[in-house]
Length: 207
Ligand SMILES: Nc1ncnc2c1ncn2[C@@H]1O[C@H](COP(=O)(O)OS(=O)(=O)O)[C@@H](OP(=O)(O)O)[C@H]1O
Ligand SMILES: Nc1ncnc2c1ncn2[C@@H]1O[C@H](COP(=O)(O)OP(=O)(O)O)[C@@H](O)[C@H]1O
Image (tube, rainbow, N blue to C red; front, side, top):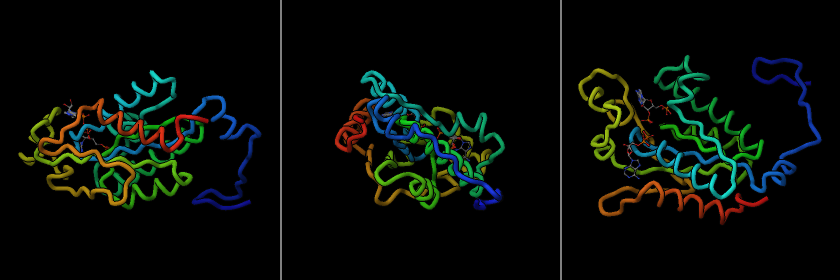
C-alpha cells in the first residue's frame, strides 16, 4: 500500500494483457509525438497531416489538441502560467495512457515552458516521447493569424498572449526541429514525412 499525492492506501492492479500484447495486436509501438510551437506555427495542421498519413499506412493515431481539450477536460483552466502547466500535465498523463494503449498519440499544444515539457517526457519510457519543435518566427505566425488573436493581443484586448506579452521557451535537445524560415519553407505534408521517417528509424511503426 502506498500514498500517491492526496490518495492514501492505494495499490497498483496489474492485468495479464500488457503493453507488449497490444503492440503485437496493433503492429506498432505506442508513443507520444509532442508538437510544440507558437500559436499559428502549424501544430494542428501538422497533427492532422501526420494522423492522415499514418492512418493510410494502417497505423492507429489519436490527436490531443490544446484548443479541443480546453473545450472539455481542461475547460476549467485559463492561460495563467500555473494553468498552462496544469493543462500540459493533464494532457501529458492522458497521452501516456494512449501510448500505453499502443496508440501513436499526437499532442498539439503551445506548451511554452521547458520544465512542463520535460515533466511530460519523464512520464514516458525512454525513446517514447518525441518532442517536435515547429520553429516558425513570430512575424510569420502573426502574419498568418488565422483566428485574429494576434491582432487582438497587439490591441491589448487579449492579455498574456504567447509571443506577445507571455513567454515561449524554445526546446533545447528535442528530437526533431521543423524550421519554417525564409526560403526553407515546408508544406505540412513534407513535415509529416520527416516525422514519419523518424518513426520508421526508431522502430515505432512495427511491433
Ligand atoms: N493567452 C493566450 N495565449 C496563447 N494562446 C491562446 C491564448 N488565449 C487563447 N489562446 C488560444 O488557445 C490555444 C492554445 O492553447 P494551448 O492549450 O495549446 O496553450 S498552452 O499549451 O496551455 O500554453 C491557441 O491555439 P493555437 O493557435 O492552436 O496554438 C490560441 O488559439
Ligand atoms: N507548413 C505550413 N506552411 C504554410 N502555412 C501553414 C503550414 N502549416 C500551417 N499553415 C497555416 O498556418 C495557419 C496556422 O496553422 P495551425 O495548424 O492552426 O497552427 P497552430 O495549431 O500552431 O495554431 C493556418 O492558416 C494554416 O493553414
